[in-house]
Image 1 (tube, rainbow, N blue to C red):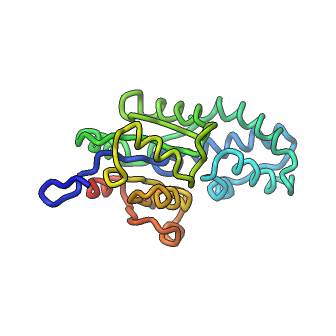
Image 2: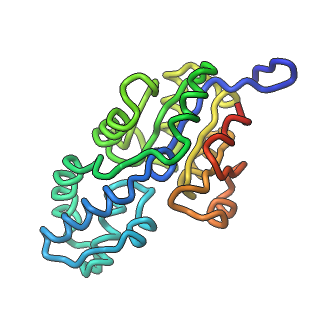
Image 3: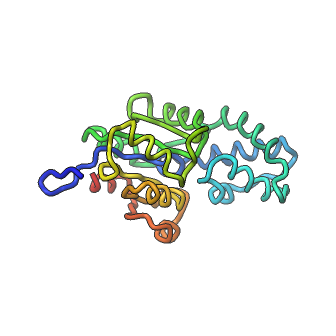
Length: 224
């Protein structure tokens, strides 16, 4: 751990994407419902989708299929094929950064902090969203779910990004909005910050064991 004047110096922040940096709920609900419509099933609500996200596209579709009438998700492979096609076209649909996020990220960048995104969203769409919303230069790395790296809450993706950024566990924060993120940070051995503007409430994050909770993006700066 590196100290300057008795204060720990962080070198990197790894962020979850959906519900942490960007409000992507409408894009996912929209794409899921287009998928269900094509399959002749009923739609889900935005509130249902909010509860279904966080563990990757397959879990999202399994839960959506069950809620829409395919009670044992027997059509999951069909659903994944359709959803993959539809979501690739619509992954930036009505996606916006949460208020205060761009300013917070710029402040971190100005401090020389390395920035990375780790999402359970498929890798292609993760990269597409990050580039569309934040441009090409802000983040050092953007990574989604892909073959060879187990999805969160397994720590593989966090460790891979830390290796790319040449930082230790003591020099890196993990930031997310869900119980999956709290477990990811814990499993990776990182100090984990839970954000309260995303898809889960305070009680969920407290129960999940996030080290600290913040109400506004600018509050993250106190940890670096």
